[in-house]
Image 1 (cartoon, rainbow, N blue to C red):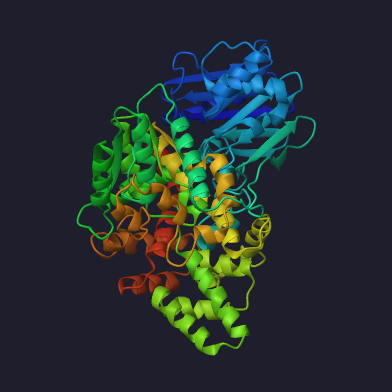
Image 2: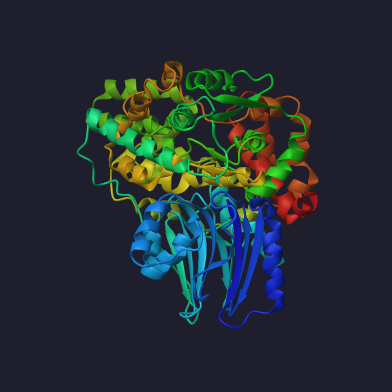
Length: 630
């Protein structure tokens, strides 16, 4: 992977712009330690930091066309670049390198801004067309590779990471207060905003075009359809899924440097590893475990899969030592507060990978495509309870309520009963919320709550969900997971791998597989207590049966036992000390009660984690501790 940055103006750039872009690149030097380049042209400055994966000698950037009128900086991998190159050569284009970067330049010459529609892969890039005085920014369909920008006063700045933009404008250090509400409501930030005031994220499957005499315009260029369902079923459907996944893994293995796979011990990474092992003479696999925490340690399953695959397996063990020091470093790389405690062991796992290979494949994205979360079953149970109640079938309704309480607890049942008459969008919003909408106002301090009284995070959530072309409940949930929740997972994937200068690839997010998964009827993906039914059938014979049959366990860390045990005193100081209180965002009394309930056995670890990572974000970026620490 790489780091890209630039400044484009509707007038001439100057030496100060060049220095700013150089600084932006330097802040992200770990994204590309192998090479660096700078291009200073009429109205623009581009910077590139390169992690060399394909055509190591010939892929220097910024890269131009033959006439020196088109200039490109690019981060990613185009998996169909060989096919595109053959087409372009047949059309008369001449290539100087073997790398996929040059394919984008010639494709832009051929198709203009429409070139992005023909790219299959993970990418974020900028093209400046000197003759047309046009800037094109583009991001891949799933948002695997990041791209941030800010526009003000006829100047557009962009970079692979938000912190690079922050370095050029200290006023951007202030938090976007609506984003704070979003994060604690949904564990994500909506509508392309970021944690930083004035910095936006180019959304997945979007391009931004700026003809310098007008304003930049962003538009979506692709979206999977959940309404048009495939007619394939049974063995034919399994064969189609298996065929696309196998082809995606094969494409993702293309590299001029060593390749390995993550192997957590779950279904998804085990299946990717098994397929990769069929194509590589030697496969290195990597997993993380936890000292003294067998209940969340999946290494025994990873070892079982590695033995079946025949891989050379590597492990790292993670504990609570130096937790807050390590978390400061992690949050610096993440740029924003994080959704899941899984980011903590992921940092160490990527460090382990970097000792052996430079490219690694993982199983991320599978849950969002094939229905891997238990919340789908929760929503279907609620829908069934409501249907029985409306039909006057009280015994059936009560049986459903008892089943719901058995699965999810009395508190969850209470929330479900309160929203029984709500529409699907409201039901989904409450199910995926971090802090329940009725709890959220109690979390915030009075003054902060009053300042944000006109902002309801449900409104942008509802607008987003309206983009789905299906009215099926599970389809709507899968749409939200792919278009919104997946962003946090991919941010972790990108930042933790880049922190260690390795390239992480996600074959499940090949857009052809995404399109097929969206077209599969929801009932074929989620039925009863068996999520990801189709993938389990595809994995049969390749993955140990114990892994196929085991209950899903997300990749996380035992921070609940750490916070209740060795980190308890530090946790109190961190969340209730004067620094945290003085920020004025949260009610200290509510935070105290939350900590007490957590220590009394409450299921609040994710809420505690959210508060911890937000306070660390404030210390790193608002208080200025992060960059100096690096």
